[in-house]
Length: 193
Image (cartoon, rainbow, N blue to C red; front, side):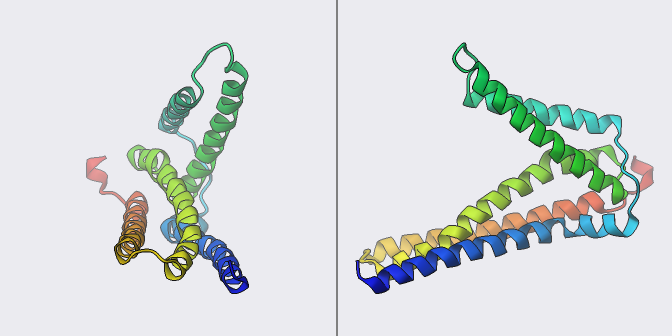
C-alpha cells in the first residue's frame, strides 16, 4: 500500500469517528430536545407513581430475559450471570430513574405516556444512538474503500445502495422517534383519561 493511500485511510477513519460523534450528539439532541426544553421550563419536582414501578419491573424482566439468553444459568455461569444481572439491572434502573425524573419535571403525568416513554422511547433512542455511532463511524472509511478499490461496478452500486438505504432508515427512524417524543409531551384531552 502506498503512503498516500495510508494517509487517506487514516483521515477517513478519524473523520468517521468525528462524524459518528457529531451525528450521535445531533440525533439524541434532536429527538429528546422537546422533553429537555419542557423540563427546563417547568422544572417541576420529580414524582414517581405506582405505574412507573410497573414499567421498571417490565424493563427488569426484559433485562433478565436477555441475560439468561446470553449466559444460560448453569453451574459454570453463575458468577458471570450475576455480574451481568447486576450491571444491566443497575443500568436499567438508573436509566429509569433519570427518565422518570425528566418526565416529571416536564409535567407528564399520564401513566400510558410515561410507559411509552420509559419502555419504548428511551430504549429505542439508546439503540438508535449506538447504531448511529457505528453506522456513521463506518461511512467515511467505506466511501474511501469504495472510491479507492478495484470493486466491480455492480459491487460499488450495491454498496452505494446500502449506504443510501441505511441513511434513509436513520432519517426515518429519527423522525419517528421525535414524533413519539412530541406525542408523550402533548397535553391530553381530560375527557378520555
